[in-house]
Image (cartoon, rainbow, N blue to C red):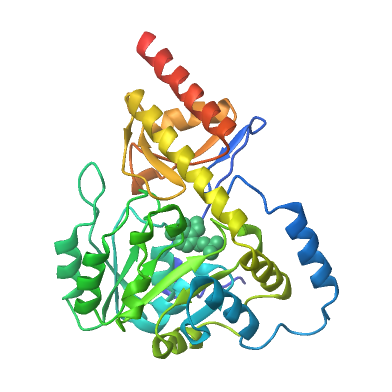
Length: 361
Ligand code: PMP
């Protein structure tokens, strides 16, 4: 006799985190995952492979990832004691949610990263929502502060730039929030694409209870290797690290991170190219009559001309252009990753063609 599934109710109630990549036609532009359109350069791959070959693969990676932490700290102008590393930044956000909000409350600002409710469920944290406001999807600062005041263990998790809306939180507001909350969690996976003043790291320097999450998956184009980190004052970093399993960053990810961080100039140039493309895409979308939220990540959040985001997404897909429709999280909007100029042009021209066909119909 088969037994029922014994998952606890918080897990059983979750929908599996599903990322569907339907590709009924040859894909001409993959703009759905906020990945970098530029691969890691061949010379970097060669260097990583050579170093990796020289390692003993039968051995565990260095316990505590000291070398990787030193490399990240040097590149980010921090001290290694402030760094926690993990298998992608998602793992560290989960560790921090577990450490600080587990069994308590977590404030989220929907529409925001769709993984967060799952992290909250794993950590048995109750989600308190303070939705974004208005046509620009601004943070509702007063509502977030009110939510944080509910209990002494209510912890805010702010995504800045926010996935999927691409907007940023002002650092002045984050400072107020850090002062009001037991600890402030700030996911800055996309901060490299925003102006330097969007960085929440000054709040760490001020000694506040702030944990900032960063990743090499976006600006450094290393999503295939899973390298993320958190920055916080050492006392907080130690607590987060306790909730991460040992050896979560393997030899390959570590070598790639070290090599990439040794020469950040190339990544910086590519970030600049993506930002320039983003500005061009936003201007052309607006010219076409689309509504576009202020964009600071490597993606834009668009209401297509004439609306009907879901059917526009399907039509784009039939033309080989894959973008994200967030469904009930953000009805009427599409999230479109900035790709190579030719991919962006294809997206824009197909979108214009779909809009024209609808007008004529
Ligand atoms: N935070 C945000 C806001 C993201 O969009 C993503 C990836 N989609 C992540 C964290 C996770 O990134 P990674 O685990 O690759 O570092």
